[in-house]
Structures are given as structure tokens and as C-alpha cells.
Amino acid sequence: MPGRRIVPTWKTLLLRLFALAQRYPGTIAAFGFVSGVVSFFTVERHEAFARGIAVIMLISWAWLMVEQTLRQRIAQRFGWTIPTPVLRYATQMIHQEGLFFVLPFLYTATTWNSGQALFTGLLGAAALVALVDPLYFKWLAARRWVFLTYHTFTLFAVLLTALPLILRVPTGNSYKLALGVAVVLSFPTLSNLISVEARWRKWAVVGLMLALGAVGWLARLWVPPATLWLTEVAIATELDSRNMEAGKSLRTVRPAQMRANGIYAYTAINAPLGLKEHIYHVWMHDGREVDRIALDIQGGRKEGYRAWTHKQNFPPDPRGRWQVKVVTDAGQMIGTLRFRVEGGDEPPATTP
Image (cartoon, rainbow, N blue to C red; front, side):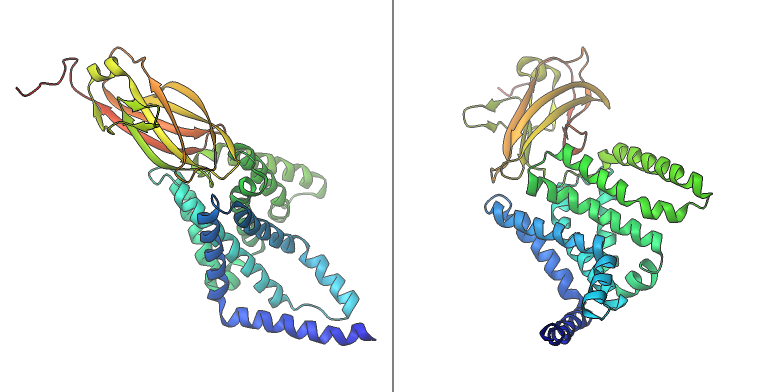
């Protein structure tokens, strides 16, 4: 039969491909990293190419969902079975590509003096695990529930980055979708962890899934908005609205200056082409929120979408530490502007 003569050819090519992957494991990781960097730098100028890379990344994840079924179908159709080590190396390649694809985005979007550093640090550690074969195969893959947790965490990060690029979904909605997928995929892991009677197991699993979703939603403040980051910021008492440029950026302000001109919080925010976002400038005085001003931004500018808020109402004693947190409508922090108000109400002395 002609079909039977094709089988050894495809089998040989497949096994050779994975043999090369085993011999040069760093090549796959390098490809994933390069694709991520290319997508990162072309997301504004060559959006179609960047979106294409993201689509390929998501399609590759479908392999992990159907690998067992596909293995059985191949065995029934062609009479041979894909070896388990081959499947494991395919999974490792997808993890490497996915993690190194999202790292450039999340590294740039992270506010490093906040809890977001923990999330990005965990993602970097996961990428290192995918590179080191003894850790990946002997420690990670050998523990089913750890492996599934690792897999779900990686997919969550990929979805956070890919959904705004592919579907132009606002960051808040992409977080909800990514969290929902992660919670659904946690079902096998939670089922393996719970050892109760069968009639109670499904309810226990559902309860834990709901709890996991709630924790994931509360933890959104620690997750960087993957496709949004600040390219320019300034705290100023003057702003050229015609040229959309802030005056001299200040770290300290006197109360008299605040009351005379108000304070401008100027931000330029990078966002993918076509993406529209609803964000907030949250003004905080000594750790307490005093104002929340809404802004609408649109992606597509290489320099970032320039927007500002002008605050003129201040408490009787405005001295102290001030922050302007730039957050999405879901509460994820894009960045923070800081300044201090010092001195008395008298104007600064002038030199004759």
C-alpha cells in the first residue's frame, strides 16, 4: 500500500528532528527568545508579523491538549506509537518557546519596586528550569501535579501577552480570560491532589477551583500588564498642551507652587497598535488615595500614547510623600510617579 511506505519516512524524520533537539537543546530556547524579542520590537511597526508569532505560539499549545489522543490516533492509523520521551521533548520545546516569548514583554512592563518583581522572577526561574534537562525531566516531569502546575502557569503568561496582540483585547479582559483558562486547566491537578470519596471529590475540586480563581484575581496587582509600559514620565508644574510636552520634571515641590499652578502628571504609555485601554491616574498622599482620574489611551505610537492629568485640589497640608500610580481598569499597575512636597508656603527666595 502507498500509505505504508510513507510511514517509515515520516517516522524517521520525526525522530531525527527530536534527536537534533536533544543534541542542541539551547537552539529551541534561543528561537523562542529571538521570536519574543522580534515580536517585542515589531509590535508597533509590523503588527501583522508580531501577531503571527503570537498565533503560532497559541497553536503550539494545542499540542499539549491533544497529545494523548493524537498518539492513539497515530497508533491506530499508522501502526506505530510516538515514544514517550519524544512527547516530553516536544512539551519541553513548547515551554521554552512560550516562556522566552513572553519574557521580553513582561520584563519591560514590570515595576521592579513592587510585587510584580516576584511574578516576573518566578517566570524567569521557570524559563531556567525548562533549559536544564535534569531539572525538567527528573524533578519537574516526574511529579505529575508539579508538572501540570508549571504548565498552567506558563500558559497563563503566554495568554496574558498573546491575547492583546491577537484579539486586541483590553488588558483587564485578557487577564480575566487568561485566569479563566488557567483555572479550568487546574482541574486535573486538583483532582490528583484531593483524596476524598468520589461523591465529594467533584465538589471539593470545584470549591478549590473557585478559591484559586479568587486568589488569582486578588493577585492581579502583582502581575505586570504584559503589553503596556511607560516610555516617559514627568511631574511638572507646566505643560505645553499644543506640543504635548511636559515642563521640567520635578522631584520636590513647594506647597506654594502646587497651589499656584497645580501639578501635572505626564505619562507616555506604549500599547500595541489598535489596542484601546481605559486607565487611571491614582493620586496618593502618604499612602492614602486622594483622587482617581480616568483616561482613555490608544496604542500605535512608537513614542507611546501621551496623556496627563492636572490636579489643582489639595489637602490643607499637602506636605509629604506623593505618588501617582498608573493602573489599568482591572487594577494592574503600569508604573508609578513619585515626588515630595517640602517646605513652607513662602515662595522660594530669589538671588538679587
